Structure formats: C-alpha cells, structure tokens
Length: 331
Image 1: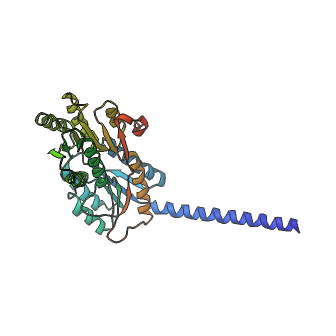
Image 2 (image 1 turned 135 degrees about the horizontal axis):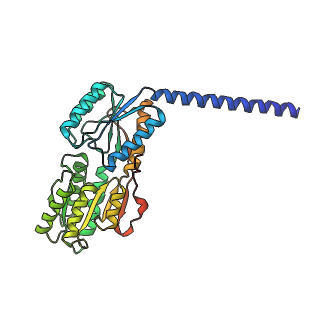
Image 3 (image 1 turned 60 degrees about the vertical axis):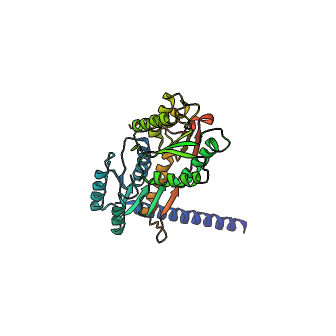
C-alpha cells in the first residue's frame, strides 16, 4: 500500500513539474511575442554626456535582451532640429518614442499627436506640459524644496551668514528649472532673511555659469550659496567660487545623474552638496518601463505611469567614491 502511495505521489510531482514548466514556457513565449517586431526611438537633447549615454545604455540592453528595435536620434543641443526629429519619428510610426524634453512646451503638441496616433511616449527626467503614457525621472519639486531647506539652515537665521543666494538654472523654461525654482521660492518666501540676488540661466554651459557666478561674487562678496540646477554646468560656478578664494565661505549646491566626474569635483571641493538621481539607475528603470509598455501597461485616465528616481545626497564632508557611477567605455 505504501509503495502504491509513493508511486502515485511521484507521478503527481512529475505532472506538477510538467505543468509548471509548460506554464513558464507559455508565459515566456507570451512575453517574447510582446516585444517581437516592436521599435523604440530615443530622442535626447544631446548624446555624448553621461546622463543620456547612461539612459541609452539601459534601454539598449533591454532591446538586445528582448529582441525589440532601438534607435537613437540625436538633437545635438539644437531645439529646432529636435522638433523636426520628433515629427519625422512620428511619421516613421515606432511603437514608442522616448522624449528628453528641453523645455516644458517645445514638444507638447507633438507628444499629443504621437499619442493620438497610437504611438506611446515615455518622457525621461524632464517633463513636458503634455502628459503621455509614461514618465521615468526625478521629482524636481522635492529636490528644489529639500535644497532650499538646506540653504535656509546654512545661510538663514542664526547662521551668521548674509542669506544671499544665487540660482543658476540651465534654462528657465526647462521642467527641472521651472519646478525647482517654484519649490525653492516657496521655501524662501517663508524665510525673509534669504535673498535671491541672481537667477540667471547658463544654457547648460559651464563657462557661462562660471561667468555668471564671477559677476555675482563681485557684486555680492558676502554671497552665501550658489544653487546650480545641473552638476555639469555648476562645475563652472564652483570654479568661479574657488578662483575668488571663497570656497570656504560659499556653499555650491547642484543636482544631477551622479556620474564619476561629479564625485571628482565634490572630492576637489568644487561642489559642496549634490542631490543625485542616479542616471545609471534611471536607464534601468526606463528599459523596464519600455517592456511594461510593450506588454500593454496603461495609466489611469488622465494620468501617467510613473517611476520616481530615488535620491542620494552627496556631501563634501561625507563623500564616498561608491556614491557615483562610471560609464563603461564602448567596445
């Protein structure tokens, strides 16, 4: 009797294993078919910077692993060209367009047009005024608020400092600059001892950020803090602070994707406090979002599928090399 029972149990175990294997094979085949013949076009503001290269690497890895097409069409910092590239991409009818918006309005009409034609749009890190199927990126309101609060602590009441702050956006109409400025100004409005003495855009250029900061320091030698909206151009601002001999008295704040160049400049004392949204991790998130969109994931009416990037605050006094990432050389 025991032998018959054990034999029956063994048969059931084999059957269960076969069913599980069949289900797994079926699910794998279904997932594979979701990607078959699909095409993604990534339209960045510019390639050749670690931010966009990191994102592209994450998305391309998923394309290679899952068998869907992936193409990059580089706008090379030319806004007119970017708009033209997007229109051409719509005509080519990919399944998904990944948009890196330079301003909140430049691509709004085209994003709406693409979505109306059944082309899903994934916005990465910088949002348009126009919602799309999905967004992967930083919470700029949170970053602006948190940096402003830190500035208030360092430069505000009872700090013994002037309370003077210079803000250096990349572009005044870029989503990150719009949202960070709004959040920071809301915090500063509650602390009248904080005075924003300059709010000039650098057009993302380190040299222009350096020039702006040098001029502000000449006019305000008691400046307490510089708030740059992107680490790369803020390196220029930090160098102006160092050149003026103010590195010990002026705090330099920045945000960005947390690549090795930034950590080198934190270690060198060019940037003091940095809010990193980890572009390498964003690339992985973007690649995963592409797969979910191809599998049919949809947002609620009037909403977007969203993945908010985790933040790491890197400070000069507690900096660790592993807080930044490296972009491997292309083979």
